[in-house]
Length: 315
Ligand code: CUA
Image 1 (tube, rainbow, N blue to C red):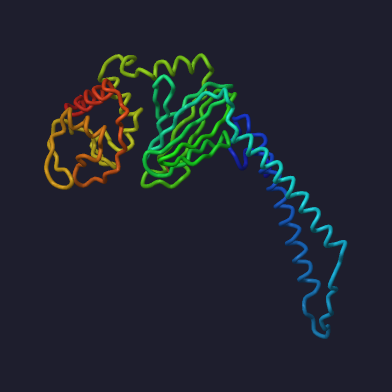
Image 2: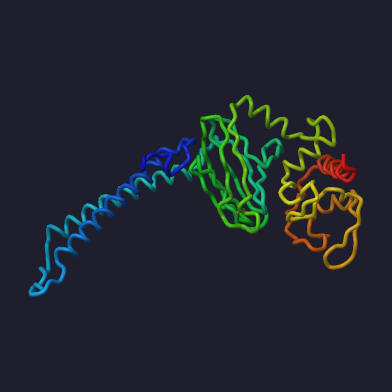
């Protein structure tokens, strides 16, 4: 049980799980064996050679060739083996298969954005099963780290440069994705799901996701979908509750003070400006922490404005 896979890790779901887990358990076992051995021998010697009245200390022998060779050669063999196995496993995980399907990843405080070749975009990662996937990652603000424990994958996501990693998952299913680099207030909520779909289902999804507004029954419905899909919900409630940003409930059309002085009416142009250039007019009392959405399509911005208007009227 102690050395069983499920005790230390979630069940592995990627093709490289076997090597990673095997090496981890091998090193763990060696460490446990030597820990027990050293503590046991140490304790035995402490008891055996403790100071006793009437017994004076003897001179210890200076040299034991056999013993020294044994305690040098055995650990050397173990360490070279661990290095060889670890290095080849690492190389395999760092060598991107040339035929891999690429997904662009953008990390920002505090959500993930996954972009596909056909311009589909989602805060969750969708991939086809049975195919090598290469993630090309960058950050809009601070250092984040993308981690998918079930795939034994972890890679820092750094502003101003691209990092990458790859995996292949043959089992359709849903897996957890975490940010594992402390990145501020909502670091612990910077979560996403990995949806591994059969190829046909994935093709269907990616086609629909490329045109959320076109596939939604109405502009209002598209706005509501985008409110969740683009990560607005993380910081702007629709219930009146104040989170990291102001609530959207009843906010459209109202006037508010902005930090640095002045007032602004929340109209169509203010919403658009706040998406494209969030730091331009920050509502007084809030931190200027919103990431930019300057890549957002015009029809998506219109859909979000429609949704905000409906919240103002309490529909
Ligand atoms: Cu992003 Cu922690």
